[in-house]
Image 1: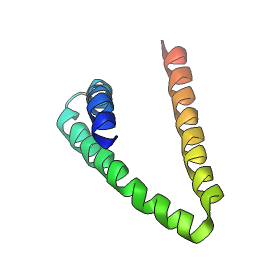
Image 2: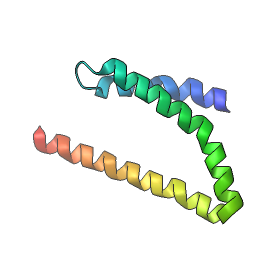
Image 3: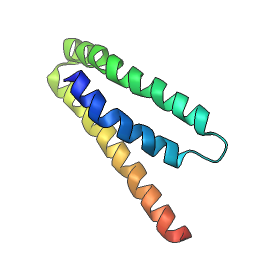
Image 4: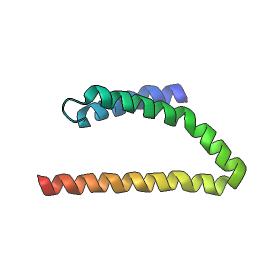
Length: 86
């Protein structure tokens, strides 16, 4: 599953990171993206396992929900910012 998800999503998200990078900072943006992606892919099972062991499944399920809500807030902020600035 990791290989399938990696193969399908990494290249798409990588291109998005390249397109959103400020002028002149693309190499740094792509390096930061790669580092963050691999920390997320390999760190999530460790963090999720520790959360389940210490606080239970409900707490672990609330964490991705909060992260998704934060991501949605960022997306909505960026959309409204683009609409206002033309």
